[in-house]
Image (cartoon, rainbow, N blue to C red):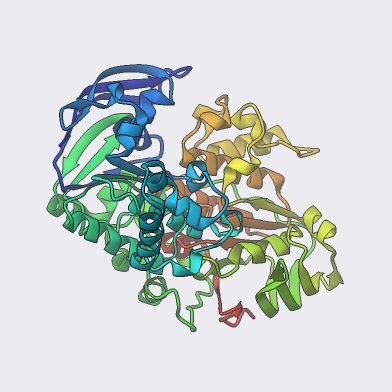
Length: 505
């Protein structure tokens, strides 16, 4: 039993961030879904349960969080870790080793597990989670989704009584999300307690025993599964929540693609961005349309192969992209999607073949001059002292009007003076996208731009990207099919070291 009584917490240096007057009981064996807009307090609540507050996050705490009548605030972290296993929103922040086997073994090794049993448990974990292909790998060479799988495996290996998962699906492909769903179902059947803070709701709709909706740091309502699944799309979008029934909110052809990431005939949605007619999209704030660039743009890849440490990643790619296209790059975790777009930007140099810009071959340094990339882990590209300064950081010229338009479009005006490091994961993502908007480069690349975003923010990002498409070429690495439906005009599906769809217009 987890009992939260009259808990309020405010982070040091902030008068608004945190939670207020939280009362919640979670029974043994329950699966509890925490949902709400970015910054509503979901992650703060998870930090109270796993003891990171007050151990690592300073601030003012009142009330009590108790696990089996023990006050979490009074327990040392190693005692809490024996009961509570945590998977963070950014898995990079919980790694302690450079290879996957050592990372999976880390927790149980610290508990003094005998070597023979440790080796057996690592092998068993990999088999049960179907990640044998990730064993013996360098963590720094894994994709974002693969890192997320290892983070979950490291907790699973410890077999805790309580799982606390913060956005565990954010970087996973559709097949892996289905697998995650089955893992949660299995550990729940074992009597484990599962607490999930999540924006992707559809895979949890049939698993959660109670749904806690948070707003402005408070619990606004606790839903039963029946009540939650009966919410209309209009009501749910007004609450900032994503789809509960994915198949009802995206076209059937796209839903089939989402449900079978291994398909060799991915759907093609010519003109998808022009057919968004849902009420919520029409009413969402629209950014001003960006001025089109003067010259027509064409990007061509001719017989391009990509390698990583001489290992073939993608082979003999030939494609063309034109101004106005918003191209989704899909495929299973680890297929080379990020490597592909990094090569487009000139950041990945282990390539063969030709990259042509309006018919002219471009070397990596030249491609960099034409491109702005929003990375999958935006923490790598946030450098400035404020959100406003970040929007123009590193740019030789940036008009104040462009910065203001980006802040307004992505709902960042109220936090313009905040340090980017103090923001939630979803807020950081929007700041990086705002910087991409201000850059106005002719080739824009976004790597999982809606990771960790609520419905409102996803709709805003979709609107921004559509507005930027005039006279520009945009590539988006994504597993978010709600976003693809709202924003993209074309899907390129990667797999088996090649491009499985016809990219030609």
